Length: 172
Image (cartoon, rainbow, N blue to C red):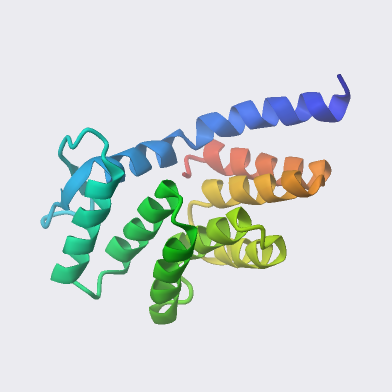
């Protein structure tokens, strides 16, 4: 096994640990039926992890407060998780029309573009997201995946290492 492959495996393992907080947040979104009005955090009620119910709940919450960029972005991530890439992209675009610097929507849009095979656009959006993201671990991870998909393992490794460094600083 070559040195580059071993480095990639180590970096991937370390980065996998760093995105656990993102996975936990995403799991909460899938399990939610409502968003607690007293807090910005999702209030989780057990729905048996039904993503369709979580999507319906998110849409209902948006009907109650159409100006909530956070709720719209959460809907975009749920749609992304479901595999509805085009619909997720439209939701992220709506958020970005209101606030083009909203890093969570930028990262979501970059993920959608990457999953759709639009790698150049995805790279530009994800790089842009880094400028505004105080917790860029997921963004670096997605850039690493993008470069790895292209076969640019050196650049992928660089992005993974940046994500790990941010994680070690206590960022998400």
